[in-house]
Length: 235
Image 1 (cartoon, one colour):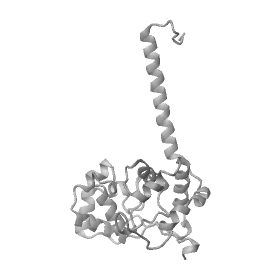
Image 2 (cartoon, one colour):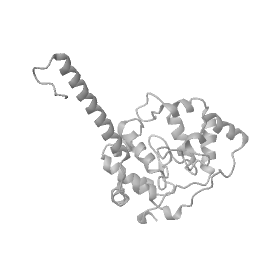
Image 3 (cartoon, rainbow, N blue to C red):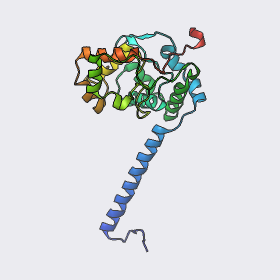
Image 4 (tube, one colour):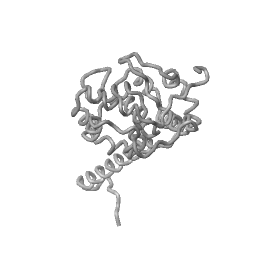
């Protein structure tokens, strides 16, 4: 029968017991963190918490001006798991953007889950699923770039059905935002710009900036499942 070590147990038994307890505690913390990351949010609660988001993401054609100028991304219809991952990235500093970081650090895990659930289904009635194959087809040059980057292997053949919901839908997103995002993965040692992601960082390093821009422009030309849904006060 197993008997827990007492104060009279040999030192090596105490050491083994402490090691086991530490391992169990570490495993529990990892499970708890994963559960918080993947927790299902409440879209109704998310709608009530979205006031801080609509000033940028609820205005059609709205442009960010700091630290770079580009249209803010469409997030209505984006994958909830990806939205949550992005917000956590800003919160941890893995994505650098002063405004988004200030917002993200104010959010709890529950807030992030609720907002992600809200935007994933926001405006769903106006969004039609896109075809399995991208239309229009890319030019020969762009097709070669997409193959070189193995883009479809993660983001799906039509760039609206990623292989994992933790990856973003890309089709139809604003070209200038996509280009800025791609460049960000290649930026280091900048307090206001840059994204940390080993896979995307490695991919982006293969391309010249004009090639990244060509990829972004093509992806933006595709029909997508994301929208900017105007709030009533902005219509």
